[in-house]
Length: 220
Image (tube, rainbow, N blue to C red; front, side, top):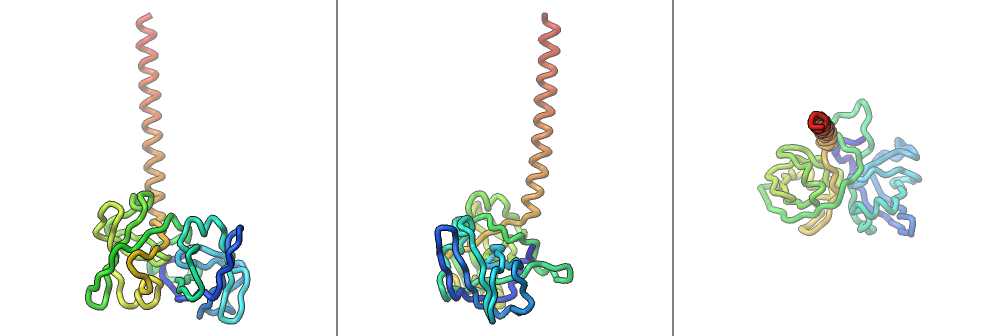
């Protein structure tokens, strides 16, 4: 579990692809001595496991499924990546609850200056757009952001200078892709309400079938 507040802007030192996935080597200023083998770290919003570490760098395995479903497959040496260590009980939740399980890939449609800040317009798939809520949260490349001005599959977010400097979003241009994770609370609400609606429909169908059966019995 993560919060969407980026701790370090790392750099891809190397990425080795194979038929089974990839091995990702990242240069970071995170305290390596405090990172354990097997620890989960969000890399541009994707929850990955540390398999090796060295001075100033961490190595992580990336599955073929993750490469297919996220923007990590397009990474090259020198590319920046957002890094966040997992949530602990004494950590402030400055963003929102993020699982690191990417739902899909979106893209930047436009970037407009607003003083020192920037107004970004993103477009996501239909499966992700259904979870967009005005003034709600979304994780883009693992960054917790507030959504507004939703227009079907497009929406805006405002990025302050600090976010532009400390995350990958400040390094991206129009047309660039981002990993998208919808707010898990919205998905839970949808699932619960959907189950309740299904139960009510089944109960109505059973009641209708029982009524029809009684009516048919009375006519014989």
